[in-house]
Image (cartoon, rainbow, N blue to C red; front, side, top):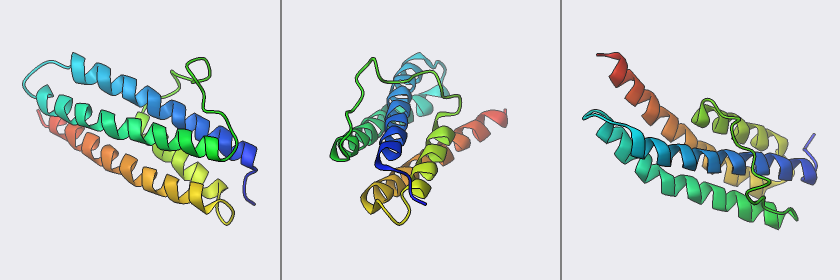
Length: 134
């Protein structure tokens, strides 16, 4: 059974918060990492900041379209992510399942966002493999 509109809005707000938290973490890590090997990661993170802001913007617009209000700084929940890309993938899968057969617009948007997050996840796992080799 599909989730109610209010439940979907809440799930979208969670995803929105996650995207904003990811932006903050990417900015911090793209600034703070040191060393020659860190340069490639810093460049990748700096590039992905724009994509993550785009994700947050899409989520905000969909929240509004569904009749909700996009959270400001007081409504954004931070500090809940340990594995940001993994957590985002799980959240998007949850929304995709919750909107199955009912809200195809939200579902399609989340399928696209899931693809983006899975791409980031593969890239970061590749970086980790490189570091584990030494």
